[in-house]
Image (cartoon, rainbow, N blue to C red; front, top):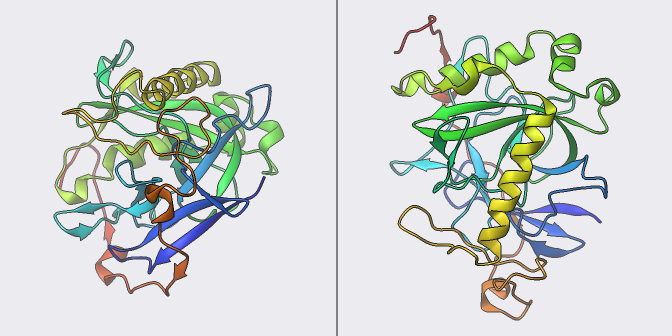
Length: 295
């Protein structure tokens, strides 16, 4: 099984898209890539959206057919995260778990807030910098529960199974032991990253505590079941709260499964890599934020 990105258009433009191919066939990173990467369900697949140290806010498109990765847009402009000193861009490989969905109609009992209508977010903390559209096999170590504008936004902590430290990292306490300061930096990063854009500091459930692997895997299974309800049409894929493209080629029992001749599939763009467009120099600016402050 071999996954590779199909790149369309120039990075840093509104037209840029990264689709995913499996053995030459285009697949949906939201629906077609299996969540679990082994029979024991101890390893999961992760789609890298944003490589470490970069600023472009890239994410799987829920609305477009076959869910390509694209750059988020706000008020007609491409979004970049700010550099909040001492952090530069994203401080991990950031991405999502396929076949998971944070249901915006369901409030989690521990956070008392509904899901954010996205696949589960993952912070992969290994030493190698990934690339957009990469499919990694990772081991879940724990999770934080960000409360982002009133929504539950789980932030899983994971390690690439091929990382040199993977055998030593098996639960959340191992992260502080072998990578001291990383969980504290992760908490800070999510709390302050929107402040330069005029937003208030984010908050966390559980007082900012990172929950352990067992708890995180329960979240993974819960969101996988929510995705199953969505892809099987047990619940609609469009309501006044959300609109999700559920077209797929590999989910056997899904009424949304299509063949290669379906216009939804056959009309998808071909590979057309173009050199990246320049980024405005303001993206490199440092922001110095005092504790508990806003700019």
